[in-house]
Image (cartoon, rainbow, N blue to C red; front, side):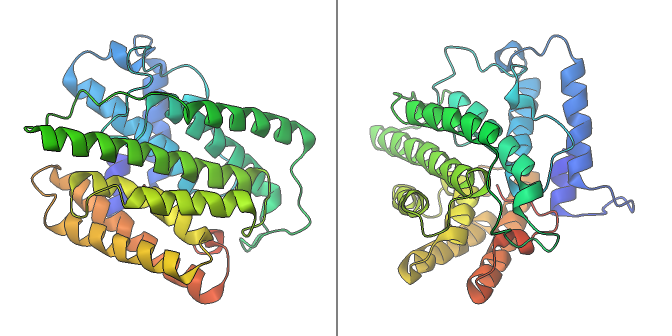
Length: 306
């Protein structure tokens, strides 16, 4: 929760401690708890929520950061095991399945490792950089995992309780679309930050199109829309077509408006503030990326996009 608060309002307590440091502390606390060898082992609702929220911050926080990480992402190992019964269930808090969470964590870990050589001191792309053969080998295995993730039959999140058949149907469509959006966002980071593919490569632009397509399957102003921030930001940074940029920018505005009004009944005030803070930063950086043609890595200074 301290990491969340620092993302929303840096320096709230008069001491400048980056949210990444709070997250590292939370990580060490969770690792030290021998009983938390799986998310499903956290039977009380508070612990279960906090660990899922930590997983969300941990994975997307590493995607949002550039440069080598000072730690090994928890999901890279087996500390968090969603359990076989929940592995292919799309979590309504995360916006993606437990199976995909592990893959996304590996991609984020690889991306930050490669950033050290891929980026210059100014955050520009080092055009001479090529991924080492051992990194390519690992990345290709992750690609296979992503392909497997894309063929799974996912189940409805047990935490969502829709009142009508129409709502149940919409929830299923939205959760599947969110999981797909995160899948393709991970694909973009793998291809761009790990394998070093250019922005105009077929693989990257296909992923951008897929994310934009997923956006149309999530209702505007609904609670699920807030989960789109990271996929939309990722697609927006790589989108080359003006029409795609217009769709993404308009949807980001919808999320920002919803975060201040319509989704209030569904989220605690802390999460609402986090949503609004994230989307405002994402919009600001996207505008600079599009105006300058420079990579997004040049404009980030500890923001969180998720």
